[in-house]
Length: 303
Length: 309
Image 1 (cartoon, rainbow over the protein chains, first blue to last red):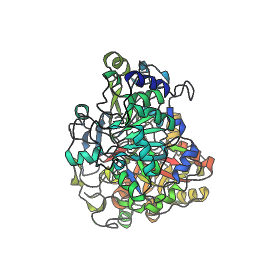
Image 2: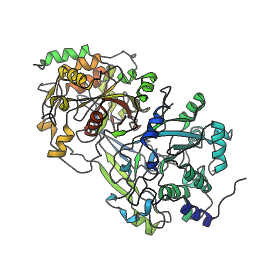
Image 3: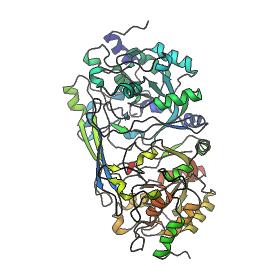
Image 4: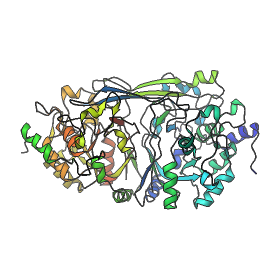
């Protein structure tokens, strides 16, 4: 049975999984450097049937327990005679929208990835590690680890922890191994639960996610990006507030791994089971929001 | 020498190029229907070196003659404040985007423009109201657009840095570009027409294109586009030549592609990097990937289209 790490062990793990300096002291791209042109070309060969699946939730314009800041949609001009025009306002972080976190989104001891100061993010936006480091898109091999499928459950309950042993078991069952430069997607079944039972407030009622002990596993596999249908982190995780989001801190700050939060992995789960294949071409094109800390995204899988 | 048509001839072309009911009378996807799974799988086989190129301009937050409604970027939380106030310090922001116009790279939904009170497939313009669009909204493309991309680089074949504002591109120019680039535009392709606008802007600054003009396709190109069965049309301008020279048809390419043919449009792409990449690789076809945001009832989405070689 997997056991939880002590707080001081989590903090020691942060230092152990650090990629600071790995790609030079000025690097702002972090683990995206694991994706080579050869890796992209090999990933394209995984698009065999041409079937395409979106991994994004709709950008919701309605408030709900998980969506206190819905997207604003205003019509600037409506219908006839000539044209219709609109306007969208989006606060991409939080628990409701599928978005990519930039490496400047969270800090540890006043630092972001590669040791840049938290002062590099000011009222002007982010001067280091902003989301536009991904302007040429993220195309690589995607791998889904479908944890409810392995546990023969419809979904994981809020607060259920995923341990490295679960990741190993999923790899074995799916016949896939996570490798350097992969986009790793972890399914918890959150949105199936939401479809069945309605939305809940994840901050108060919790979310399933990765236990902090998974950080060593993620680091060894040299993943480029981590994504989840929840927020990767387990909520609540049993630690004090200074370790509220150890996966966010360990990946974004220490490893330089960008995070996709709130993906919709239901259709992908069905497609992978149908094709009996848990690897695919993954493509994502964040908006070029210079000095931004995140972008809403619509990641695609092609099987 | 190629010549523009009279206005009534262009209107006759609109009917000739119609795809209404081609995919059934309830269809809202239009020419995206030309992209089959087979077409997507074949497009993936075009990836050889793995080089990736963005076709988007940065979303501009600074007003300019071609950008009266810049993107708003507000910080909800910043590193410095957060570090002093929060146990888990973080930064977060908020963006407001009006995607249409001449400044941002965006995909027009088929409900964006109308002709005689109708949008694509004959749906009434009144399907777009204060609530947004009930038909042909941008979320018909929620599963992304992946296909073969083809670039026709018109300044290259005319041996100029860019086309001057108001320059018309005729079907003969498209034929000449295909011949020069040794590529044929085919069913389901995403076709990009480069005018060199982004290059001109980098050298001379932005200009108000509705007042000073833009290079773009002459209306006589419409049957060419229709016959080739393209899925999507994109340009570094807005596809249409501005001014069009017609009294009642300011943007005939917009009207005919979006309304009659059901062809989604990518406006204001940045095609300079892709032009260099095509020239360097000696090929003008590539895998094209675009994932519009899932904005239900929206008339457009900002996009960052990608090309893979």
